[in-house]
Structures are given as C-alpha cells and as structure tokens.
Image (cartoon, rainbow, N blue to C red; front, side, top):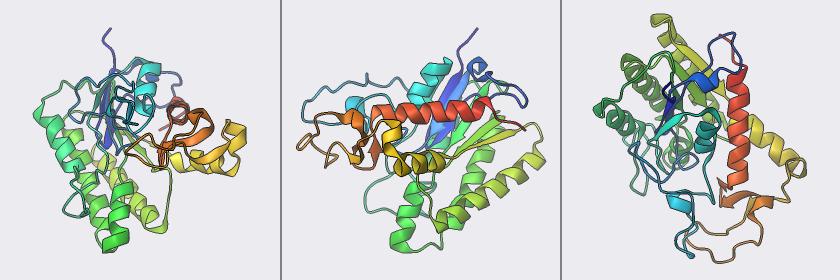
Length: 279
C-alpha cells in the first residue's frame, strides 16, 4: 500500500475521511499543503526538507522552519502516515499583484503552477488539498486598503479549481489563527465559491478547520494547555539573543510563530476535525 501524499503550498493537499467514516484519515495517500510560515518546512518545491534541528547556534530556524521543531503539517503527516509535499513559504499571499508587499514574496498562483508543472500523480480517492491563505493578504490590506481582498478570495477559488481539474477531489480549508472583519468576508467569499464549485463537481468533498477557535481557547486559559506565557520565547526572528530558558511553556517560539508543542496541538486539532467530518 502506498503512503498518502500530502502537498503543502500555502495550500495543503491531504487525504480526507469519507463522509460518514471516522478514523479513515490514515488511509489517504497524498497531502498537498500550502500556507505561510506556519506550515513551511524550509523548502518550497515539494522536495525533502532538512531535518528539524538547529545547525547554527545563532540561527533560531530549525532546518529553515520558523519554529524549534517540526511544524504542524509535518507532525500531522507523521501521525497519519502521509507523504507530504510542501510548497509553503513565509509571507505568501493568494496573489502578489492583489496583495503587494514591501518584501519579496511568493503566492498561491505560483505554488499551484509549480505543483501542476511537476505533473505529480494524484490519486483522486486518497489525496487532499489543504488550503490556508489570508494572513498576508490581510496584512497587505491593512497597509493598502481592503478593496483587493474580495478579488484575492475569488482568485483562491480559481486556483482551487485548477487543482480539482488536476484530479484533487478532497479539499480542506484552514482558517488563520486570528480573524478580523475583512477576513470574515474573505472567508465567506471563498466558502460560497467552493460551494458553487462543488455544485459543478458533485464528487468534490470540502472540510473546514477553524484554527481561530483553538487559539482563542489557548489565549483565554493558557495554563490549561501548559503555557505560562502567550508571548514568544525569542524577542526576534533573526537571532538567539534574549532566548528564554524553556520554550515549551511559551505559546510562540519566534514572535507570532508557534513553538513545536503548539504545532503539535494544531496537528491534533486538524486530526480531530477531519476524523469527525461529515458531508
């Protein structure tokens, strides 16, 4: 039996349980994932990542990750025995043209193009695309105005349709860990677009994972999750200067980027949602 393949891009492709089935996630062979730095394993072309270890004592990025260990999608892939192809990159948006940034960035359009150009084999019955964009689109809109957010949401649906045309039948949409008014509308446009896409392609299955609910629960009672602080172990993402003595009791490792145990909670959260999803 081949292992599930999971693609990661600021879009995630992973296997999803059939409606009415529980515990069937571990039968899926393909995982495609794409999201910004929360999901990036240090490379962006679906290739083998570096080990999640600190090679340079002055560099806080373990194997190129914005964390001190495996990110949640890697932990989730390990839990269900999936092959993960990761295209996620920090700072990515749906469209660079619609969400300009002051620093170079990639986007979903490029991630999908890379995946399609690789001509990966897609097993429709056991492959899943996990899609999570919005954080960096929202950040851009906070500087340049929200007029392009609806267009970015529509572009996300168009790019998802390209994946469907390539054989993907299971799609999971993941919320960012925070939500604001503009992102609520962004998500609504996406969900309505995906429902219309399913009406045209009845074989497609969709699921939604709400990370906002998880992070709201953590921040409202951090000690119940084992945290002593909801801030970060490191004051900067560029050096080890000022590091805390025990990252395990902090919600974040780098500023606004989870430490490895928080990533573990995210992996458990996703597995719980997908194990109980229904049509």
